[in-house]
Image (cartoon, helix red, strand yellow):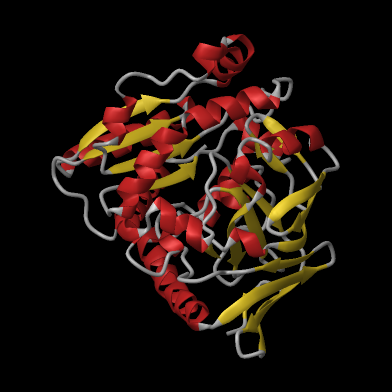
Length: 399
């Protein structure tokens, strides 16, 4: 497990992440929500005390245990399934930040649950997500998250808890004397890459590997984002493309644990922006129902690339937060099915209305499912003047 010293450093990095994501220091008397799984209690206690020292109002909430979650989806009647806790809307309308400490004690406890029940509950909670999204666009709210090692994560990643903890420590630079300084350096380096990418007049990107050939259309008024403090760790740079221009085949060679289910070897064929064929070695039925959750669930909300020069993650971690930032020998790409990110709008996010999002092709959905490919790949930018520029090759940005 994480040592007391590692926990203190983790808290340092998370608070750096929260304030970096907000692009401003937290102000006294702001409200910050700490959500945590039971194994993350020690880290939650450290953050709670730190926030009090900063003059912040911390609000703590432990998430449902996996047994509670399983009981909910097994037993909830239709009204219970879509029930929203009184006070949640008021809280979300007032919080300035949220720190989520993910510490799952089971990853497959919902495998026998009808997927449409999970989807229905997620859709019912979308109004709360919309509140937070809008507050973030108005620079009133930010968030960050991390994982705390558990026996279940280690088991699913086929490591001992000691090995798994070592990967978390390494991946988050907690083995360094001053991990925040390391993240500040990475943040600066990636800023330069994002600036170069955003300056290109791109008509579309073509991503090719052994298992896929995909066309992604960035769309108008876009910029690249990433290493913003939202995730710890985070090395990816990403864009929310115009979903309408997605064509071809995407393949995720890393497995995915999603809503208590396991999906492996998923291959998705896109035509005119929508997933028209969904295949998977395992978990195909679940995947199909997830992508039928709402209108936008079968459309791309994010396209991401990770430069292996920054990421120290080199093993499958059975957790998307780490797997989508895999460095290894060839870096990684991932797409997310579902919701898009307004911080990739090249303008004031506060002016990105629902109507403008729709016009520009920013996808909207209750779903956001990241699917990761770590194969050696080439990404070529096809520019508006007819030129072709390779921007990414075998895990490294080449600009």
